[in-house]
Length: 225
Image (cartoon, rainbow, N blue to C red):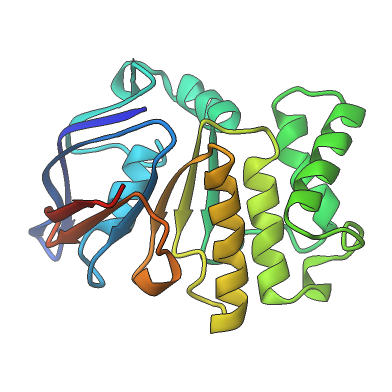
């Protein structure tokens, strides 16, 4: 599903280079539930963003479904992300002036889908996240866990090939975080490929693989099943 080869990312801070990723190579199988973990500053989110085509490397290759990212134009990358990939962020990234339903509908309309089709798909995605009856609520009228589940619904509404999640439980209490992780486990059980950055390994016991980074390098790659 994803192949990363000799990936490097270097930032310059204060005139000195900082290596966020150093020669990272790995393959992610279709249907896997992969956790990327490590200390703060280890390169976890940087790696996730590169695999999700949200950033470009200093050097190296990222390939998804046999398609090289560096061979795509910026427009092709944007279209690929919109149609094939789903994203869930720590901050939810919901539009505050739109209802839960509208937040899920917008990306579907951006794909060029008809409104009625988009509406039906959005209702279905919200239902899968146990949010029936919350469709017309604004984000401010929802709890943190409900907002995160709206964000997950938005990410899965078009049945993406891969779901990327960056610290999706970081802003939640333990009970709410467990409910959000239950939603991810159910998605994985249904065949969804998931790549998730988290330091809360106790919340993801069903992951099929745990990749640990330190100083931009893979220091452990544990395949659980």
